Length: 265
Image 1 (cartoon, one colour):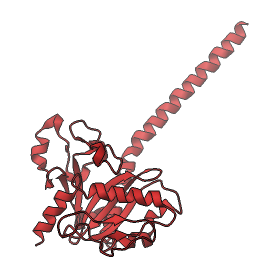
Image 2: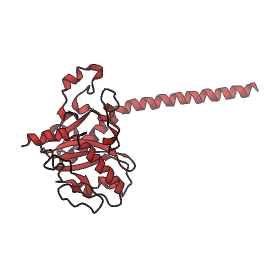
Image 3: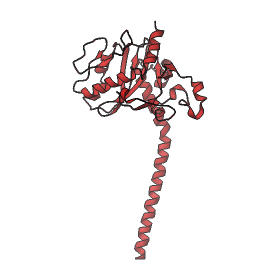
Image 4: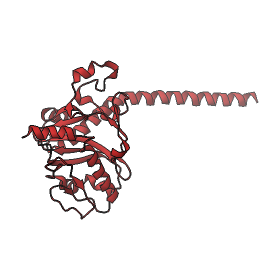
């Protein structure tokens, strides 16, 4: 009986030691890989922004170098449409929403910070986001202004970038970099042929009304403002339409884009 007890005790000791060693190894690997993962995430973001802006990575250059050469990042206060004074923001200390430079600002993390969170009113929340950061990054190149946006599709929260011309009113491109819609249906939001349908569409009418919209498949009529939806993906198309309505509306980038339009006159 004593031998059996000793055997069981030794077995538990070995299992415990093995679990401890494995835990230390996994934790160490996670810490070691974090900088690599962060760099990969930054590279992917920069690659998508360059693509939607129509900028190719320079031959013999890295994505990061091409991004630095061609793209400028600003943090915009959506309530005013004006750039955030980063020096004044950092002076707020623990209450600051932006603690680093503009390129390192993460709007997903900021949306979880009580000092930075904007609660979207239910009647305005057509994109189904509930909360967002009160500040958003905006990326500008010589020919484009790139706006991050997101919202609910049929199955997933969809994240993308919309490029508009410096006039603040002409669409130049769209790209979704993170979405979980049905492959071959809603997942066609990544199809270059569908993305091309956005090129040249206008966002606002002359009176400032937001008129850009995604219609049901085959129902686009207004060549200036309508984007034909995706065949067999009515609900995903509606989700995209709602995302555009929110982010280009008064709760989103409208004030900022209006300032661009005014400045281009």
